[in-house]
Image 1 (cartoon, one colour):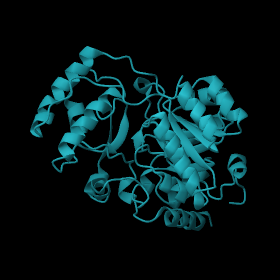
Image 2 (tube, one colour):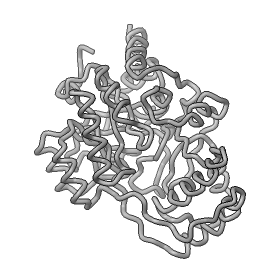
Image 3 (cartoon, rainbow, N blue to C red):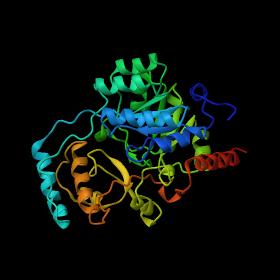
Image 4 (cartoon, rainbow, N blue to C red):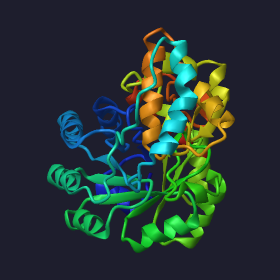
Length: 354
C-alpha cells in the first residue's frame, strides 16, 4: 500500500490487516506469524492473571521483533448477586445431571478487568508492547496517558458513534469499528444499549464523523471484504474468524470441525455463555439462554457456570456447551498457515483494487 495511513506507517506495518485478539484462541505463535508476515498480530490477555499475561506477551516478543497488539478487557467489575446466580445454577442443574455432574455451589468472578488494575497496568507498561487495545470500554484516563507517554499506539473498540466519540475524547489513537457480524464478544460499553449496527453502516458513519482512523471489524474474510471496507473509509481491517483455522491458533479439533461444517452457517449472539453478548456458533447454551425467563447473572459469573458445564460435557466427548466464537462470515473460513493466509488476503486485495 503506497498511501499507508500514518498510524500504520509509524508501526512499520506493510498490510492493512489486524488479526483479532480472540482471548483463548489467539496464541503467541499466531500473533508472531501474522506480525512476521507484515500485518499486525494480536494476543488477548483478558482471560489471564497478571503472571500468565506477562508470560504470553514475553513469548510473543521472543517469536517476533515486529509490533503486535495486546488486548485488554475493560468491563465494569460485576456486583455479585447471590439470588440471581443461584437461580441460574438451579436452571442449569439438569444439564449438569445429564453428564453425572453437580452444578457448582456458587459462581466466581473469573476474569479481572483492566480498569483500576494497577498491577496489570504496570506489567503492560513494563513489557511495552508496540500496541495496546481496549475491549468493553476504556480504562481510566491516567493509564491511557501513560501508554501514550510510553509511545505505545492505542486502539479501542466502538459499536456506535457515542462510543467512538468517547474513544476520541480519551486520546486513543485508532477506533476499531465492530459490526454486529463480528465473532466473539460485542465490544459495547453498556450491553443493554447495544444498537447492533452492521459493519458497513458503522464504518461509513465513523469515517465521516470522527477525526481518528477507523479499523473495520465484522464478517471480513477475504480480499474482496478488505477492499470493500477500505473503500468505505476504513484505514485497515480486523479479522478474527478468518484466522481460527490456522494451525497456529489454539482452536480445539472440535472447534475446527464445527467451523468447517454446516454449523458455521448458524451463528448467533447470546449472553448465556459468558454474561456479555457474544457471537458464536449456535449451541446448547444459546438455546438455554433463549428459554430462560429470569435475568442472567453478570459477566464473567455466567462464564464460570458455562465453563464448568463444558468441562463436565467434554469429559464425555460432547462439545455442546463450548464457546465456539465465530462471525457471520464463518462459512468462508479457510485452513492455511497464518503467513500464507496474510499473503493470500493481500493477493486478493490487489486483484480487487485494480
